[in-house]
Every structure is written in structure tokens, then in C-alpha cells.
Picture 1 (cartoon, rainbow, N blue to C red):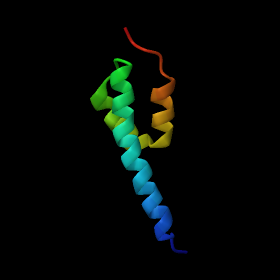
Picture 2 (cartoon, rainbow, N blue to C red):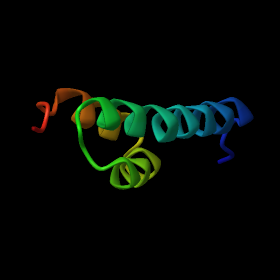
Picture 3 (cartoon, helix red, strand yellow):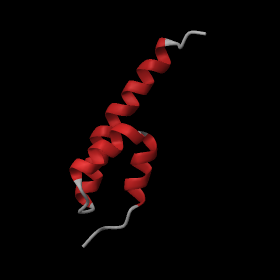
Picture 4 (cartoon, rainbow, N blue to C red):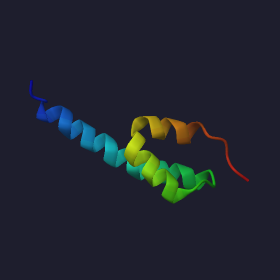
Length: 58
């Protein structure tokens, strides 16, 4: 069974968007930017949802 190239491209786009968006959101919430780069890279969309739901850190 072969994976469609469309799914591969969508997966890469999802990973790139999550890797860029997670540290941006984390920076607004005073969270670790470097930590959330890896969170977005390894967790993808789930990491993006997690960082978006976190409260702002004082």
C-alpha cells in the first residue's frame, strides 16, 4: 500500500505551520519559545492546540 503524495505534502505543510505558529503563540503567552518550537515540530496540530489553550504566564 502506497501513501499518496498529497498526504505527504499536507503532512509537511502541517508540520511547518505548527513549528512556526507554536513559538509565536508561546511568545505572546510568556512561555518558552525554544520548547514550543520542538512542541510544534513533534506534536504538530495537537501542540498548536495545547499552546493556544494555555493561560498567560506572569
